[in-house]
Figure 1 (cartoon, rainbow, N blue to C red):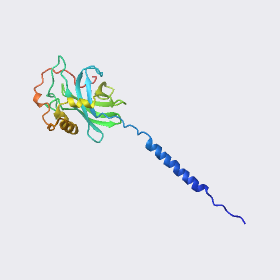
Figure 2 (tube, rainbow, N blue to C red):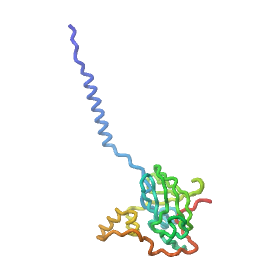
Figure 3 (spheres, rainbow, N blue to C red):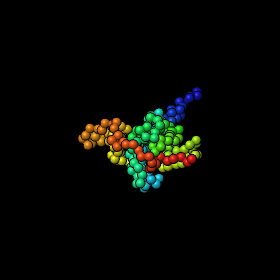
Figure 4 (cartoon, rainbow, N blue to C red):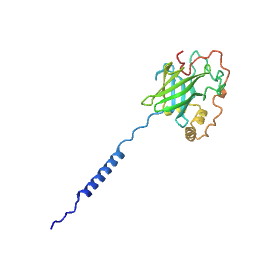
Length: 224
């Protein structure tokens, strides 16, 4: 009589497959997560030399407005030797006309595509001109390259801005912090034991008619 021995290789194979799957899951959980790409959001400094060691000209706060759209506002400006201090944009022709430079919407409509931001524009507060622009964040997230241009990006020029540390926020006008960074404003107020500043009047106390000649470029002028 022929007898059939029960086969055991199938259960063993199933157990081995389960062990391999569990091991792979363990490895994936232990592996470091891939760092997210740096964004343009944050505080940036433009210098008079276009290099990190130059004198500051303006600080621009880039804001994530949702849906991959970004805006940049003037967070702080610095008087330049031999140049008049521009306080309001009396040459602006849109909704920014006669607005204080402090807090003004400088960069608009930037659509994020990875580390590149396209189809935006930048205001030149000296004369109210609005130029097409694009931004590129460096791989380490520390440099923001702004390119203002005419018809195409080829007809323009680059300018590097440099990321400022979070500690620089303490040097901003409290009203700017309250308006654009309410969470940081609340934190600062709690640490100081004072109520948070009420936004709405930043820069107005200094507002005055701008002189006929305006110097101190706050944004690169495209190549004509």
